[in-house]
Image (cartoon, rainbow, N blue to C red; front, side, top):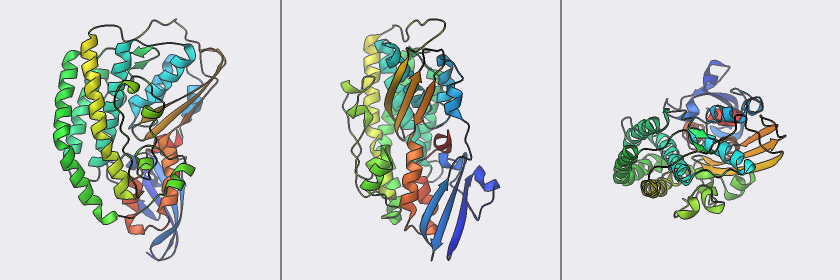
Length: 372
């Protein structure tokens, strides 16, 4: 491809005006939703990239302000369909902090286990999307999705968080089945790492994002770690019981496509360790409550609250402004995909158009999480 302006359509944007329809395969989350990227190309090399977001805008933040606090969980898990549980959790933790609620210990450890299950499930999908059909990553993710469905009632949208805890406890048989899946994953880690490294080897140096640009655009999670950004909310501002378990941040250097997948794979083993510890702690705690009683109408005291959690794709921040009503006066989301797509635009400069699909996939973005 020579010189000129090119409009790329991804996902449902293929049905709009587009010079190129970028097929990322059905498994990759960036294939769903809708995203356009306006490119300037010179001699087959991208010289400018302008992501055109907003095609999937659903006014999630305004809908938060029209729902009572209990109803927020249903909305929270839908904008990022890879981080559903963690998005619910982020909202619940901010509300609980503002109200001075301390959930039962069993709820705290259960939430941490489910948050790490969400992290594993999301990471395995992103890994499996670039490997041949039938790979271990997709097989293991399917088993984790089945366990999430048993635990919460939902494979994609769990909606199990409640203000003050969880809707139901995790059972001993479920924990035993989970440990079996973690054992299977442990045995597969080396092979997955080698397979991903082999696929990405020809892409060394492609779509490089610098440390300075990662900081400037607020990029976090695996995309930030790949640039040498040593930041993880679980370690730096512990919540739930993360302060009681070992922390390991998958920081690497290079900032290119292979580095991003190296950082992504690097978070699998620490997540497995955390889940094992959480399962053991829950077995020790035995039966007990997983939520706290609430009044019929929940009202958050007047004030401003902010909280962060470390989601599968990066830091999720929640700004809650309350006027002591039964609905938020303002609820603002800070989501990783929004930062990742900005970093992607910077990294695409200098990238050959032939590598566009691989570059976009390596920025681990979800369209709904960009537009909200």
